[in-house]
Image (tube, rainbow, N blue to C red; front, side, top):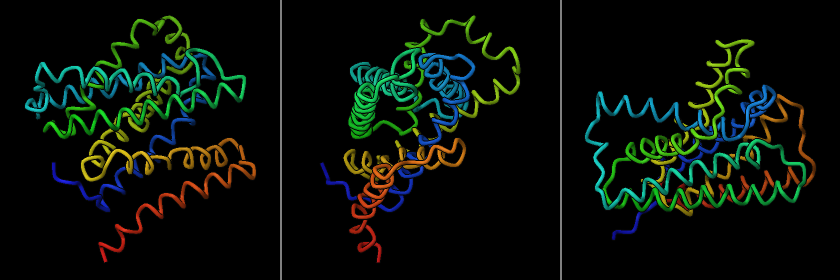
Length: 248
């Protein structure tokens, strides 16, 4: 296989995906305050984009829905990893807050593992000739179906009963900002990069989350937090020095 050289466009797409993922905390704070669980949030994060993409493909791009039976396992794995990473990323444990720092560290590492494996399986599917739109479409559909049995509809209705229009609008906005947009950006960026490089680029996500937490919730990082931000940004800059030299 021909070695893939990273491009500036691929870097920008993955960085935008990471920043979009970084907005998740804002929505999590809003919905958990209403009593929603991590699995319920995962359901909407996957089901809404899945329905949107499926309708779009049925109307305009039916060709991207064709999947070989022998490759179906790839998309099922993508869905499982998406639901796994998404659920842990939201709040650590299904339906519960994370009371201990050690648990927060463990679930954060598991979330990172899920996203890393998603990158590898996505690259595997792209190398087999599948369209970038095929991957998130099936992944969202299967992931949404896997979360459906744990949805508890009565709790969701109760959470949105006070202001149903605002509740529905925030769900749609969350699905777009945290799922639909970043996964499309990331998958397209992965076509112009490698899984390892893309994973490092996507690490801009916690930096974005930290900045938004400071702006909206006055959660200022400590010294180690600032050091972590500097290290992430430094890693991204160093990783792209060769791209800048090539472009010039």
